[in-house]
Length: 218
Image (cartoon, rainbow, N blue to C red; front, side, top):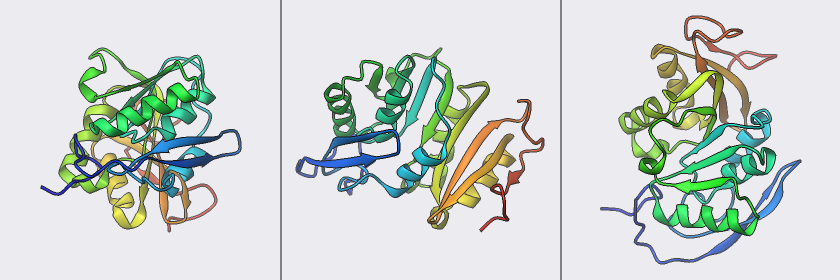
């Protein structure tokens, strides 16, 4: 079987490197390695997600789903130091990197764990994800269904998906599954999606895919 960034135990030889996460409010260096997602630079979709999504809740449990070496989780932890940030991945090498990056940055509120290590009763005040679309449509849909179901009422999940890798079709599928989906932004071919329960106040009913403010869909 080919070795992928979503393999639980990457077989490719380790080649640790340093990458930079540069945002308006966060500018840090992170350890990366071969065998993890976007090993040579912070993925542009991740950068777009962190720039376009709002400030995370100050407290509560926050989830970075498919954390890789932890750029999203580290940014959430720095922005909300009183929250508990769960960095979840099946890739053992990625989890070790995320834990090492949290330690290097002094982030005591970040927990890098496998999916089965998140307690069953944990629900989330916010979810962020650059989801692993290359695992296949059915597996991705199963993954998102499981974790979005743990989103607290009146809270949001923020997803980034490349338009050419199914960003619009994923949004339509989520809407058909009973979620309200708003396209918060389109940046360099990436869709930034806000996902909420239909019953939440202030969200359009019917699971509709809404265009980004100020223009039609691209």
